Length: 482
Ligand code: F0G
Image (cartoon, rainbow, N blue to C red; front, side, top):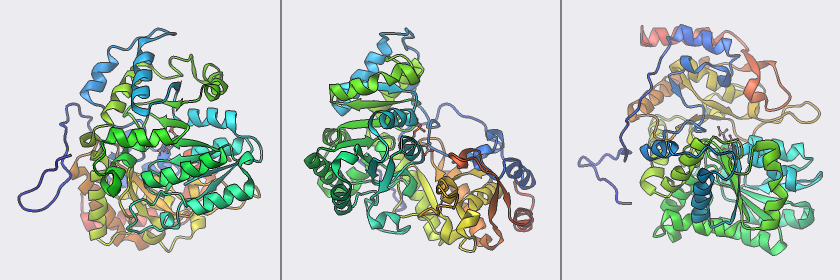
């Protein structure tokens, strides 16, 4: 990709697109924001979107679509069976990943359900660089367990390692030797490792992992939901790949693994998902679950319009100008925060910017959910909705005790092509203000705690009146500003 050099030397992330459809935003005042977060049980998942100014909850299903995607949606073929839309999507997937079989599913976790139901038996162990919430829940639901084998650097909040999502191959080998290949239904490689800050793995590491698994006859599964960011980082950070096209990097990665699944809410800028593979017998095992759980084999629970959008979105994801936007904006935001001394995960990853709550609010014990408290405080400070990625997102142990997360993060996702640089700078300003006033932020405690995926629906209360005090300080510092 050729890049633009600025005359005065500063480098800004420059969009290679223009905006043609907009949505009006609303920013409630700070007293209203305190009331809204309280009504939402201090859980940003329970806020109403009309009360949110910058929705940085997720990059899932909220990326801006292109003109070509919208145009393609108009030609969707609605037939229940044998739809032309399916054929177009299937052919695009075969072209990009080189895999013969494709099973459509309504989103990423549906693929995980089918993979776990088909492959995981009680007592099985599924190694992965790092877990994702829904992945782990599906594996444990089948009586299996997850082993996280990310390199030690991956769990260091601040680092200069370009591939913090890499597997520790020695630990993987030791685990296989200890557990035995018969008890490992598959090894899962998560591209753009979500819960440690959207951190990529290198193509070299993927090769070492998949070579090792092949030598033991163990299947490898690529979770490609965040593949587009990972591809960009491979191109930019892995010297051996700098002259490869995004398409060529994608193909060499897909040639290494047995199965690829993805959430098209992320990969492909649309909504939906699917599982691709080369092996017919494997496909036959999973196939029967599609009509059972998802929908007929040519739509798998997706709307045909979304399927058309995925086909175009996947093609566009092979364009470096398109996939660079997210990582470049995130990098800019991370650098601006670092300049202000704010603890943030480095190097910048994909998906979003991740504040390190353990250092932002070190006075809040993990038992009072520092990342959750920071998420509530961030909404109060700026109407910015982030997502807790820490202890609240973990499941309690069988005996009811807390499982403290390795990292306490507040994720501020940057859905692709959605926010402008001035909106990013507004978020940086409010994070800065919050950091200067961090001593005012207090903890949270559950008042309603669901047993499964508690972070989605759980309700919490502040452990003191810290939210009112934070709002009063905002008024004192910023007058009648929204
Ligand atoms: N795998 C990864 C790496 C993901 O990030 C997600 C979703 C899934 C699987 C599940 O896909 O949502 O389509 O069912 N991540 C979203 C997020 C929810 O906000 O990070 P899904």
